[in-house]
Structures are given as C-alpha cells and as structure tokens.
Length: 358
Image (cartoon, rainbow, N blue to C red; front, side, top):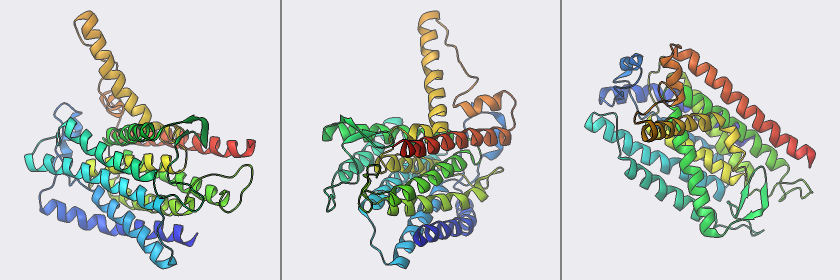
C-alpha cells in the first residue's frame, strides 16, 4: 500500500511544480496552441497558450511509478510496464501531432491516416505483448476472453481476434479522450476520476486475487497491486496538472496528453478484465464520441436524402454545442464532470455489486 501512496504523491508533486516550469519553457519557445476558426469565438483568446502539457504528466507518472518501485525494492511487473508502454507510446503519436501543429502554425497536425497508423502500430504491439509473459500459473497480462467485470467464458477469441478487439478498444478510448479535450480541465478532471476508480478496482482485485486468496469469487487478474501503483501515479499526476489546466488554463495537454490518457484507460480495461465496464466508467468519453458520430452520420444522411445536410447539434463534440447555446465554459466543464462522476460511481457500484452477488 505504501507504494501506491508514494507513487501518487510523487507524481502529484512533480506536476504541481514541474508544470509551472514547463509553461515557461514552452512559452519561451513559442509552442502555443492553434485554434479552430469554426469553433466558439471565445476560444480565440486561447491562441498561443502553451500546449504539449501531456509530456509533463507522462514523465511524472513514469517517474512516480519507478520511484515507488525503487523505494519498496520490488521489481516492476509485466502488466504495469505494458500499460506504461501504451501510455507513453500513444503520447508519442500525440506529440508528433502537436509538434506539426506548432511547426506549421495550423490547427491540424498529423493527417488522419497517419495518426491512425501511429495509433495502430502502438496498439497492436501492446496487444501482442500483452498475450505473452505468462507467469508461473500460465496467466498472461491480457486475456483471450472479452470481459465485463470478469472474463465472459463463452466469448473466447482467437489470438488474432484478441489483437483486433484490443486495437478497437484502444482506438476508441484514445480518440474519445481526445474529443473531450476541448475545454479547460474537462478531459483532465474526467480522466482523473477514471484512474481513481481503477486504483480502487485494482486494490480490491489484489485483496481478492486468485493468486493469493483462491475462493469462488476471486479475480483472475495478473499483477493487480502493481497496476494500482500505476493508476495512483496517473491520478496524482493529473491532480497536479489540473491546478494549471483548470479555467483559465495556463497550459493545454494537447494530443500528447489526450491520446496517452485514452490509451491508458483502455490498457487498464484490458489488464483488469473490465473491457466492457470501461464503457461505463469512461461514459463521458463515450457520450462525447457518440455526439460526433451522430452529427456526422445525420449530416450525411440528410444531405443524401434531402440535398441539404442538417446537424443534430450546433457543433460537435457535444461540449461545444452547449457553449454555442450560451453556457459559460466553466459551467459546461463542471456539469460534464458531474456526469463523469456519476458514470464512474455507477461503474464502481456495478463492480462491487457483482462481487457481493457472487
């Protein structure tokens, strides 16, 4: 337990102190955010705000985790290292996207195909590696089953289908967080709640692990305690980053941060056997992604049938729709945080209720 507390505290301290220095460094180098011209006009004042802040909490999370391991003198687990690999790898794809935006002074970075290709390479590498590294019980970090709160026994997949399933999960969740990252502190606060939930889930799974306490209701999850250390490090890092990212934001996480966070959420879902439950825990990201799909789909359907494309929302993603209706940005963020909190609480409730029900 000391390693969990230590990882969270170190990561939070690093982002609280380090983000301020990153803001100065990025501002001096002119690494500022470009703003979409078709977005809410209130966002134009944010042009030039330092971006790529995701590099700060990625670094803080990794340092916090390694410091906790060094303090306790326990080796890192395969599960934790794989989640960190996915976290940093997706962040690297986002970093390229952010750098191109800054270098070319435009609001679009990597082309959609190039970004998707980068995400695919990282996700496939993660999926293949997660099916390796079996422990003494023959258990790999990832499972060949699709899971809800535990493996669903009748949804056994061939290895190639497992890789495709994990790829879809990572792509969906990373792009979901990316779409949510449009208002000051929105994605940071919502992600912090999800990783806080995974800290609790991993601690519970560790206490009821089949490796240490084999009972009828135990969890077949490899390395749950070490996964809790990573989740705590992420939660602490985002807590510190939110100090600077809350409205009015002094720094943005950029695609560096949003893609990495979405990848980490999906990574935890795979490792903890909660692949379908994550759709509820990360419900806000699912809702925001659905708003974009509905907006694009409805526009294409009406254009094909009526000759004129119509929109369901004034603007997608959904948070900008409410801005266009006249809501203050802070009100949108707080209310969306409440929605995210309700999704997380419901997900945790279902997780616990399943254990109680046996």
